[in-house]
Amino acid sequence: MSEKIDILILMGSDSDWDVMSEAAQLLDDFDALYEARVSSAHRTPERTLKLVRDAEQRGCKVIIAGAGAAAHLAGVVAGHTLLPVIGIPLNATALQGMDALLATVQMPAGIPVASMAIGKAGAANAAIFALQILASGNPKIGVRLADYRRKMTAKVESKDQRLQERRFKKG
Ligand code: RP5
Image (cartoon, rainbow, N blue to C red; front, side, top):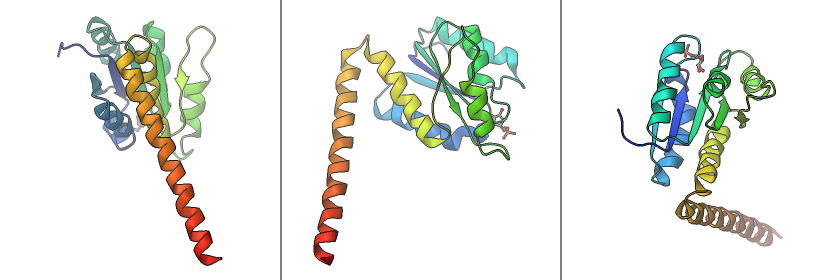
């Protein structure tokens, strides 16, 4: 595969896809150029490095990495590239993602990972954050992000309106 991509999504296992697909879905909604691949920091370290190098050569600008057990993927990737890396801690062990959160967020100084929340909210925010990074060089993405946010605002306002109507009916 050698087409241009803006974003590489990496996940440690296919068992991560249920959560990581939230990021992919959002990137699809924005017609983003991305690729989603399975590769583990522990099980396939060389393959992970190769995917990162290939992505760099294909013009990739941001890497999103999600992992659950001994969640080193985002940090290892960050150590191998100067591209910004966004980490998603996943709930894959008896510790319900707290272990992955700490492994993802507690990077030593010098190798940053932008850690999101555990799980689906983190995956969605990783996609939005990646788009925000791309928007600095692509105003069209910025316009679409502003529209996305306007729609979110409208949704909250209509939820509030429905709540007020329900309360009014009861009263
Ligand atoms: C991590 O181990 C993966 O990111 C996944 O969250 C977890 C479990 O992987 P599987 O045993 O389901 O392949 O590396």
